[in-house]
Amino acid sequence: MKEKLLALLQAATTKLTPDTVKGAMRFIIWYALLLVFCCIVYVVAWLFDWYTTGNPNLVEIRNFLHEIASAPWIAVIGFIAKAFIDSNNNGIPDELESKEDK
Ligand SMILES: [Ca+2]
Image (cartoon, rainbow, N blue to C red):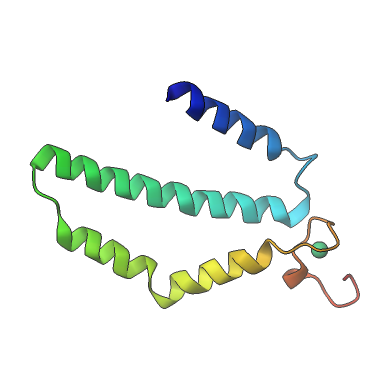
């Protein structure tokens, strides 16, 4: 398990070097990874709380699910999904480029 996790982390870091990911796309990827990391930490902390107390905090997980299904989160997911589109491969999401740059 530990070796697989380290290999996955190493593969991710080698693919996210300045040579392979250019421009603003780098920040979009790091922002998306930060959101995923924070969600994972939240769920792991919730599971740890359940493990230590013996009772699942259903109110807290319901609030979390309600939060990640809310309109602002859906907007963030939409923004990130659009920002990953870089058809001319210049490192600037097509959504953020002016019409002359496309
Ligand atoms: Ca582009």
